[in-house]
Image (cartoon, rainbow, N blue to C red; front, side, top):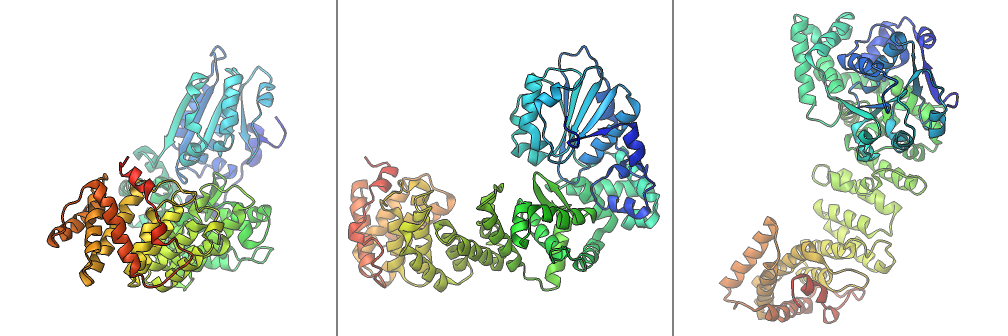
Length: 594
C-alpha cells in the first residue's frame, strides 16, 4: 500500500501519539470535537463496551477460515463511531502482536492489487473511516481477494452508507459480515461517561453538577439521550449537550460565535460567517460541499478545508461526513441561527446566498441532492415566507430559463399576498415559454399555467383564471397528457371559478360547465380535498336546477362553459392559446374516454 495512504497503528505509533492532554483539550472533546489519537491514548476518554466487544471479535482470528471478515460501525453523526473504532484499533495494537492494524487516511484509495500484495504471516485489520467513499471498491476486493488473514472495519454515517448503496451489496456471500449500530448509550456506558466528566468537576459535568450524585446524573443523561433519539442527528452528542448545558447552550454558542468573529481567514473572511452558512444548511438538511463554500467565499476547495473547515472542526463547531460539511450537531446549528437572529442577521439573505452559490458550483461540480437548493423555497413556504421568497428569487436570478424555478417564485409570492408581482412575472415568462429548458418536463408547463390561474383568481380576474386553467388541461405541444393528479387540481379550479362567475352573472353555459366539471371530476380517484371541491360544485349545480349530463354531453358542456368564461376575459394576451384553438384529447383519454 502506498505510504501516506494508510497509517500503521502499532505500539511504536501509540507511544509517539501519546501525550498528557490538558484539561482544556479533554473538555473540548466532551463538547463534541472529533477525536484525535491523543484523545484516545490520554486515558481521559471513557471506553465504551462496544469498543471492547469489537476488539475481542476481531482478535478471534483463525487462519483456517475460508474468508476474512468485515465489520461495519454505523450510526448518525455524533454517536462516537470514530472514537469506538480508534479505541478498538489501539486495543488490538497493544494486545495482538500477530495483528497489524492499518488506518486509512482521508480520501485514500483502496486498491485490490495493493491489498493482495500484503505479505502472509500476519492478521491484517484495515480500518476505514468515511467508508462510504470506498464501499464499491471494498466490495470488489472482498469478491476477488479471498484471504482469511485480512479483516476490514468500515466506519460510516448510516445515511452516507445508504447513499453509497452500501447495504445493496451481498457482503455476507463473500465475507464474514457483522454490523454494529451505535445509537445513544446503555446504562453501563452512561456510568463511565458521567464518571469521566466528574473527574473535571463542574467544568466536566456542567449542569449535571446540580444533581446530588452520579446515579441521578446517569439517569438524567439517559433520559436526554432517549429524547434525542427521536431526531436524525446523534442521540449521544445531543443528549450530552442537553445535560451539560441545558438552557445555557445558546449562551455557549454565542460565546463561540464571538470568538469566531474575531478570527479572519488568510483570504479575509471571518470564521463566524462561514459557521453561519454551515449551520443554516445543516438546519434544513442541505448537503453543503466544500465546492459550494468555495464558490461563496471566492477561494479554492483546498483553502476552504485549511482556512475554514479545519479551524471550525478544532472548535468542535463542525464536522465532515459523506463529502459534506455540517455543524457537529443539529442543536449547535439551531443555536447558531437563534443567536444570528438576535443580532439582526438577515437569514433570508443567508439562505439566498446558499442557493446562489450551490447553483453556480453545480455547473462545475457534482452536488448530492442538488435540487434541494434551487427548490429550498418549498421547505420554507409554510414557516418563513421571507426566506422562501428570497431563495426563490435567487434561483430565478441564476437560472432564469427554468420554468420550475419561475413557478416556485410566483407560488410563494402569491402565498405572501404579493399576487400583483406574481402575475407580472408569470405574464413575462409566458412570452418566452418556448425557450424554457424544462418546459416539457414533468408537467411543468401545465403546473405553471395552473399557478398563474390561481394568481389571476386572487387578483379578481376569473375569466383569465378559467382560461389559464383550461390551457393547463389542454393538448400542449411537446407535453404528455395531463394525468389524473393534474386533472383533479385544474378541473376543480375550472369548475369552482365558473361557479363563482355564475353567481355574479347567471349565464346558462357557465352553470352547465360547472355540472360537466363535477361530473368528469367524479370519474377520478379523488383526494379528500378534491372530493370536497367537486361535491360543492355538485350541490350548487343541483340547487340551480342544472340537469344531469351523460359523459359525452359533458365534453361539449365543459368546453362551452370555458368558452363563455373566455368571452368575458379581463384582458387579451396574444401569446396564449385562444380558447377556440384548445383541444382536450389527452385529458379525455386520461378520464377514460375512448
